[in-house]
Length: 208
Ligand code: FE
Image (cartoon, rainbow, N blue to C red):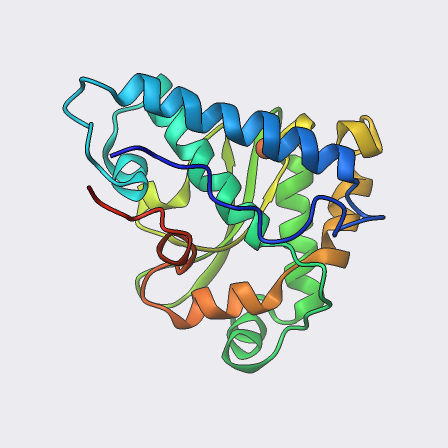
């Protein structure tokens, strides 16, 4: 099967002024698109050919194919972790955040610290374990919490390409801006689901 570039769920300029059109244009049309192209090149004629994107992320040994496939998945998940519509934390996810972090404010602090504290390139994640308990993790480079049996609910990309055009080296200003566009509705849907929803509704699990 061919891995496809999933559609960006909003217009390139939709997250302005927090994230510019230029950033999204490079990030989606150049970086994300290149990971898709590279994944398809690398998977060809290997025992992994024919696997869905999520299967690749779960099963491919560390190396270039894993890195590219995981970056396809991670970026698709990241686009949905943000929204031009203002959303707020409510319902069962709000209760779980209260239970596992003490408050929404405390959660934001822990998540921001994970994003800020990741040395070099990587990702900050809100995840749910098999028992439904929430935690924040950060992963280096392309790594994804699915590899550790944790279900992602929300992510922030902290590779420099995510913020350098808008904020130069000020990752802290980018992470602050992320909270202005955070998509709580997406996180809440993932919390309520047994599996993350995005890869399914974006056609990323298509087989054949
Ligand atoms: Fe990125």
